[in-house]
Amino acid sequence: MSSYPDFMIDGRWILSHRGGKNPVDTSIPYAWLHEKEYCASGKVEDVATIFLTNRECPYHCLMCDLWKNTTDHTVQAGTIPQQIRYALDRMPPAKHLKLYNSGNFFDTQAIPEQDYETIAALLEPFETLVVENHPKQTGDRCLRFNEMITPRLEVAVGLETVQPDVLSKLNKKMTLDDFTNAIAFLEKNGIQSRAFILLKPPFMTEEEGIHWANESIDFAFQTGVRACSVIPTRAGNGAMDFLEQNGFFAPPKIQSLEEVLEYGLEMKAGPVYADLWDIELFSTCDHCLVQRKARLQKMNLSQKIPEPVRCTCNFGRSILTFLLAILLISFIGPEDNSQSETIKIGMMITSLSHQSACDAAELAIREANEQGGFPGSSGSMARSRELA
Ligand code: SF4
Ligand SMILES: [Zn+2]
Image (cartoon, rainbow, N blue to C red; front, side):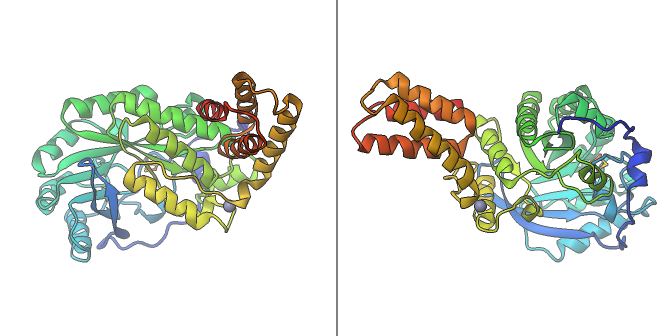
């Protein structure tokens, strides 16, 4: 992919591709859920998430579909506390709360400031509160609210991608400096942060999507966020569908999400989560979807990397690399026991692909060993994985 359209992508263009909003009732949140999350304590704990119904976010980002469950006008004072109460009355207890408002919590057009005190009173039972906010809305209002509440505040900020050209095309109206400054401001004031990172936004190939998601995780932790959440980019908001139909976007593969999450966890810089909402959209193989979903869930909750899923959808690539390995081995000959030759094979195989190549190489080397050759196989596999 990597090419950009020759038309201008701006708020007007994005809005012109939208369909209608869903009907919403401002007396209740549009959704709420109770789930488990690996928390700052290092334990898996209960988290309640309430999706508040309020006025649409003013930014109109290219990939965003959160506007679907919003209103066109600011909700009346008292409405947001009423929504929070409504959801809490219907959910089991939790230590942690997320208040997601399809926009920016500190945008007073979305959450009226006169509601802060009532909201603060409702938050008393919680240890932590996560809200979402744009870097440009991160300022004194955030500090005033933080002083009112009992739970520890964490602000989730959309970094999206550190690929500069793509970031500017997302219409987020944010630079990397804006992000860095917002995180520094929060940190200076004792407020934690987490970054939302897009896996494979438009105008990227699968490999670029993985590369830039990894780079974005690096950047986010360097700026001081406590955690990162990786979100596979999807169509469905009109503008993204247009880009998909015209070859500027394709959704990422579930395998890519696994790869990025593994990268983030290997960094050990802080918790990294994969967003599993609608994860089915990113799988093209019915055989391994359930296993891959379970593996991602396990990584989210344990922050450790389980064994990879082995499936026939990897088979084509594996068999190719396996045959290549056999071919190479037959050229070099099992009687050539030098470790450097084995490393060469590992490197060549690895340059073709990652996990599946390693699996194929492992098989090839094991078979060669069984036939009496390749004493250096374990060293070469370690090296080939390192280079993968
Ligand atoms: S800032 Fe967030 S909520 Fe607002 S349009 Fe962009 S992605 Fe959507
Ligand atoms: Zn499969």
